[in-house]
Image (cartoon, rainbow, N blue to C red; front, side, top):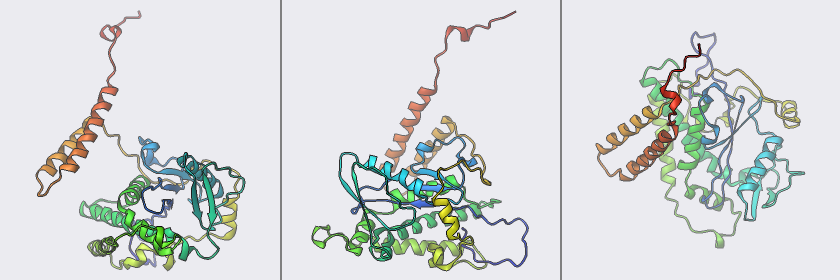
Length: 334
């Protein structure tokens, strides 16, 4: 969803509204030391933008259904994944009372499930106390900057593909949502006794405000006629800007579906061209040279890039196939 509130009274040429939607499920422990891969639910089984992409490298769990909603079947599949990740430990999993959180008949070895009391999600759910808000802010900042890059490069379409959105989701969750934010949200809802909760400095509050300021600044640079307010852009559900609302019957039908079927809904994304090892290596070398010319100490970042370069070297060696004697002779079958 682009941050533009312009309303059209007639059809406009060359502008088609992007109705793509993703649902994201997040899970973490109370000190932020363990964040599970986000569960991302889309509408298509195999979007075109997934061409030449190995899903296991995305850093998320990707699933799909017609409405891109969490269903009881998907949730139970995720529960088994969660339980496997907790092998060797005994953990408590806190859940709210969402209709899709059906745990009846699910056998878990390492997990005890407790539901929060009804109608208390906004007060007792740590993710709703600021973790999800932080994630959305960082994600939408990346999206706005993506739109700015498209605008500056005079690109014909600023539409975000599912692949790019997933990469933004991955980075926003794993890198941008800090352990401090997570710990403070758990402390805020007072699920644990203060005596056993470690003291954490609230030095990340200014960082969160800075993200909001950056988004507001970038929105102005996009030159929309009627840009959305930052608060509405970060939390659009409260302003009813999502045009499609689902009826109770549609939700029940989706949750009660016996099995997921492969859905080939309209997919307007394009196939990304494959990147060769040579092109990837050249890009990394350019990035190293760029950092070497910047003011400041970027030794750690350069070391990380060099680690990736060594991975490319191993892939290059692995891709080489030793030639046999038959490769040096042309066999005439006549």
